[in-house]
Length: 260
Image (cartoon, rainbow, N blue to C red):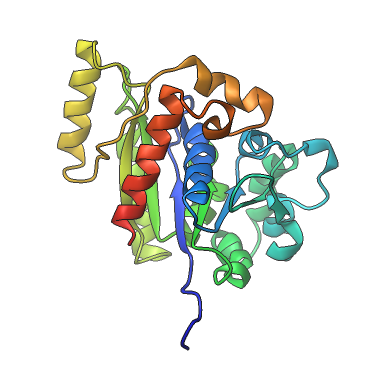
């Protein structure tokens, strides 16, 4: 139909290893893509709810969350919160979501709950980002089943590639049985310090593991990135001229260039 909006592209941001900058990437990339004029929905599917508070949403005031989407059949539209930041809406999460893994185990179609829930809003957004929990349980499986692609943040540290083969095995399993079209969107190097030999070694290993999938943009280790969530703001608003902000704006432009 002429003039109709195309379906959203759905991107899961996943790495079961904690502390790799996954939620920072989900919040900062969503904010930067929204700031560049796209309509974005961020689905927080991590029980810690850090992506929710990263956009200044008060968890004590939540009435419907990702937990309700997965376990109670809540409508996505009823769960969406408009943020005060350009172009970004959020489906929030809190600790209730930790119980979803257990509650879903005996349910039918348990891996497709999220996909079914957000189907009603895919015409409303250009991009839907899903911040996954640091595990490969049922909630992450729901995200990978719903997603068109998976974006993988990897920190430039000694154990960077540990567990990566497990994540890729899970993605291949999802591709075989639940979501034949899922692909790797890209791999993002985080906590990057070009002065260190270790950083160069890890970057080389990651590029060998994911040829042509590693973003040219990389995310440095900066204090501003750590501070921004405490103020309920993505870093591009908290300190627009910081290295972290510039890095995520660069990533957003690279991401949008890949998705023209």
